[in-house]
Amino acid sequence: LGFYNRAFMLVNLPIEYLSGSFSKVLFPAFSKIQQEEERLRSVYLSSISVVVYVILSIALGMVAAADSIVLVLLGKGWEEAIPILRLLAIAAGINFLSHYGGIICEAKARLKNKFILQLSYLILITVGLYLTREKGVVTMAGVLVVAQLIRHSGYLFVVKNILKIDQNSYTRAY
Image (cartoon, rainbow, N blue to C red):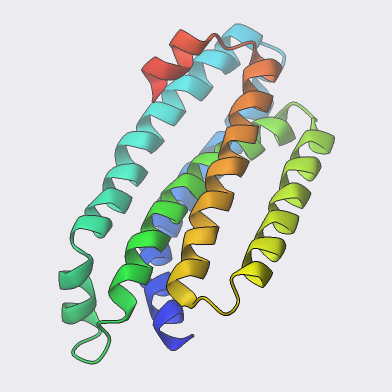
């Protein structure tokens, strides 16, 4: 668990600071223009493009540089954290993309959608971690990646319906 904890901290601190900054600006902006559907859709898609560019670039950079990150910041003896860091970097990038779907649900007062997605995610994580409890921490980190992908797919579907986004617009944003 120590390896998991250190990998988690290395991944989440930089991404959390950047994403938190975006969130503090986007929620009030989305809420303010919630009745202007075309404008909200445009701002959301632009925001997703920026988040994908910045956050996923950092996450994928951490995947590629995991060896160096762990050895430089944690030192020898922490090598077992490298595969965990790689998986958690992917999970963190996906998580923060999902976060913006949650902001849309809040801004448009679709809290039931968000609640269902979050509850489903919690159940999926719980079941996944229970089923892989004897397979090791790396496998459990993989469960987190899969659960994040499933939840993100749910948010894509919900936001697509809320904002009436066509698939081409979504594809261009990503």
